[in-house]
Length: 142
Figure 1 (tube, rainbow, N blue to C red):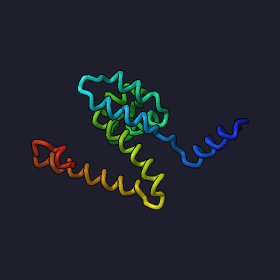
Figure 2: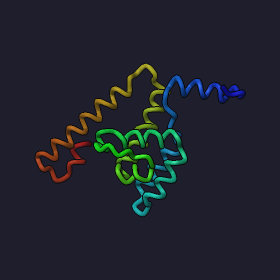
Figure 3: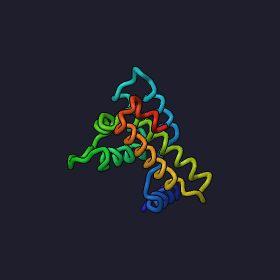
């Protein structure tokens, strides 16, 4: 238990919510780095590590069965960046900041369910594009 009322309130919120928030400034910086053609993985790694919430969520995605079907745990952001790639890191960062902003303004709408359904539909569209040998499967995702 903390002495500070602010720290007590934060602890209570994190226990209730279960996740650390992603800082908007970090998400914007990550998106800028991933769009920069000369930026490297070390620069992106440093930006992600400044935000504990984003760090935890990227590691969670990197260790999911979808991206890491092996039993070898991804325990560093630098490994997660290499595994997931810049485009996926940008998508995660944008998606998380959008999700948090949306939930704050529209708490009555189940945006997590909508996003999950959208992700499944997009993944299926890319798989279909790959099966039919579409030259640009990412376009079918859009």
